Length: 341
Image (cartoon, rainbow, N blue to C red; front, side):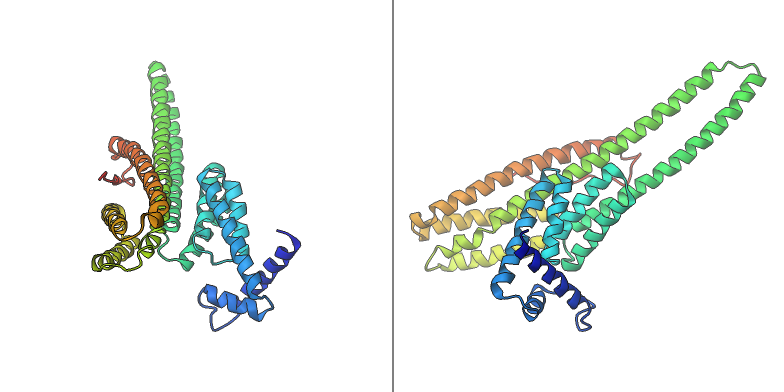
């Protein structure tokens, strides 16, 4: 940021702190309108406020791009700059939570995990239905459970070693060859190594599924953002188009509240309705007005198909591991595919 934007960001910090001490709103997060009202009351004008919002959105986009590219430190840097400007920017805290979680998988530092949990919970305060924040908290809990199992496994291994020592003395006492003992120790070590390898493969496969699903949702959201433009190009809407518009909006609302296979089926229904809308618009609008828009929508749909294919491949790899090792790791469950249509 330049000096001007540094000054604006400092004002926003003061505004947020003022809002946190306001007893009328202290029990809940500030809305964006309340944040704006405080900003104006503390000296910002409309242009300065809008400039800050634009800046925050830019940092948010960069943070999301870095996260997808697995540049977690850069994602955190951009995300923290975004929330420094607008602490209630939707999805920004979720991006920070996931970036910190992925870093924690590598460094296992308590403070990194705490950061991931902090931002996930903060996102759920802003948006209680944020699926990425829920996924982060769920993954953190599963990982913590796995680490606890590791501790138990190490204790069990110590007990085994202690038993082996006693067995050695007994074997020596009864003049039994040590070869069988060495073979048993090697077998135990191999089983421990195999257990850890399978567990790590399951963790990585599950995270890959979640990452691929995020990319599918991003592509779908990009396509859906163009649907209102599709209807707006028709000057006089026929009755069937009005009904179709209402149906699409209802499906989008249902999708927000659905998960798993139910969500996938609703998204397939939405795809079919969007195809109907494109055909109706072509009948009732001038081709020059919709040609570019249809090309853009088709490009988004191609990307959706590509990301769904990648997601299904990740699910296939994950489900194979679950089917092979489900008895050993019951906490991992089969995940649904996107059905081709």
